[in-house]
Length: 131
Length: 95
Image 1: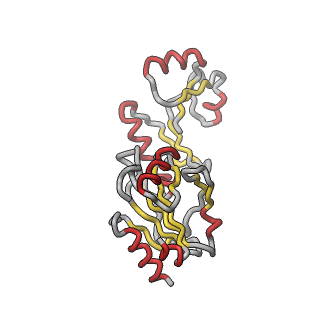
Image 2: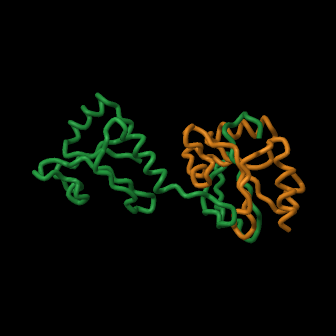
Image 3: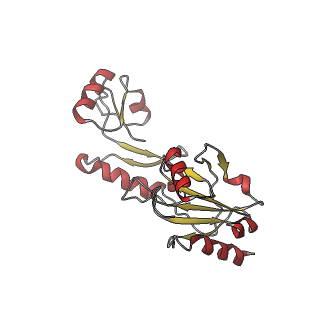
């Protein structure tokens, strides 16, 4: 989930969004509360400074980038997210638990199979392809 | 499939299509196992089946989880025709 954030208000964000169609939401930090909380504020105190925080699913800050290179920023963020939050699934480890729903909206929780059944998850690219 | 039942294996197919697409796929191919809906790619990402470059689908791979809940095998070279037989063989070898 990506958010842009600045002190501009909703109306200004809507205009900005209309022009650039970012594909992610812009948050209005008009009183600079969030910017202050993250120490992402310019010395004059009037504006946010340019910083990108990557926060993982557990809520931990994984990277802080204060030298945002605007044209490369998207791929940089992606890279840093992959580096910092990706974990490799390995044979021998406990399978992460999950809840998922099938084609009839029946829910399954992996841990419910423990000591009862083995489970095979067979991932495939598309319906209507073999397998 | 009976061998799969005998071995107490629950098989799930997983892909990013929705329930409607899955139902059609099951009907057309007479599949006798459920297909999990992973439209948000959560499962695919969790188990490393999401292809980073092609963000729209999952790659073909199978995760074998034993009764203790441990990942017993990660099969990335799936032979779609022999997949059923291969997984029977694998779980037989565990017993």
